Image (cartoon, rainbow, N blue to C red; front, side, top):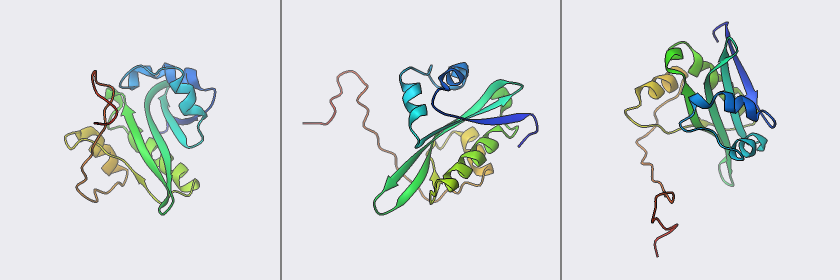
Length: 151
């Protein structure tokens, strides 16, 4: 990890730290979602700071299945554009992997778009392998007129 970079694991009560890093998120973080995420012991948010300023974050969500055990899903990784290729993503992913091992996860995984070269580079640099050609399917009920399930 670069000497001037700090990684902090946020938890219950650290809502203000998430709000201070709002520029790193796709959309502004919302209460009560922030507090709910931080209070859940199977949800992990790590914040990278340089000179006291947020420069990146990673979120992980532990999942458990009756026949597979526990695994860590890398939900989102973000690094400020001027901080990319400086070891921030690698440090965040290394710390999340350490948490996953401490929590007895058998693996850690994520999905990203095939044309997201920044994310692919970060994941590969941190030791991730591309195992197969997966297809991601979504149920998006947020669009106007979309029903939860077709009748």
